[in-house]
Length: 329
Ligand code: KG4
Ligand code: ZN
Image (cartoon, rainbow, N blue to C red; front, side, top):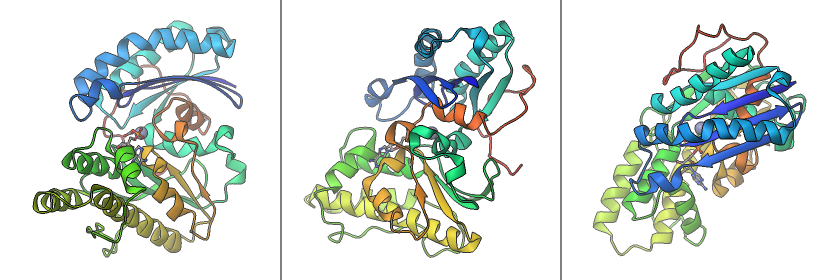
């Protein structure tokens, strides 16, 4: 099967062709553009997506060695995400599907992050993953725990009540004078720090829900930095990282126990965090984490999610939905 996939939900413009198990992908990151503002500016992100869409589609088809006629499906991220950014991908995909007369599959971005684990390039295939499983999606925009009785079926069991885990890394980094995106900056500094020097609150670990909350941690780092400007930065970063990772770890363990799950599927940019990866590897079920390029936003994962569906959507029957929740089906 040949799938053309487009992902523009935030600040990555990505186009991929999945030819059976082979991936051809082009991704343009806008990080340098948004860095000067300390975070993603939605209007700017949308404008940046526009000029790369058609050249990427042409180049990726050429790399895959196929013509538009040979495509079986067109898949596109339709939500959740920034509405301005989503619209660029959705309307590009719709126009192509109309012009080339191809079936279109609007894909949920969260499902994409989970489905990245089904790419053979991730070292596994859905048939190798034992179910039921628990999925942990951790990125700049999302922190969600989902129960998956089988591939393609999801029950949202927990989510952040305020900031996402990646957003917390980004905001703490900003408080500490570090560049955007903050996750890589904090984890790099934390590598030579001592996490036991300063202890920050691990949000919601004692609550009985699977929900997360990260805005309080950001505030406590803000006050700590104001009151202890001379604290060793590496130690502060190690403490912040420990607090975030601990809360993700504790909730994942609790979900595994409650749902008697046989595996954990991880996705999203925060899955690049070395401490999170290390902590999750200590679980007593197999843990699947895609390689870095398929953890951060990419179109190949949208093609992988498309393969979980049988029926296309009528061309004009869907819209970009910034709040699309992955509901049970
Ligand atoms: O999935 P992603 O590329 O985009 C969104 O959908 O948000 O995730 C980006 C997020 C940013 O918040 C970034 O700080 C975080 O992933 N991130 C990390 C690391 N690398 C990226 N967080 C912690 N540790 C890292 N090494
Ligand atoms: Zn994402």
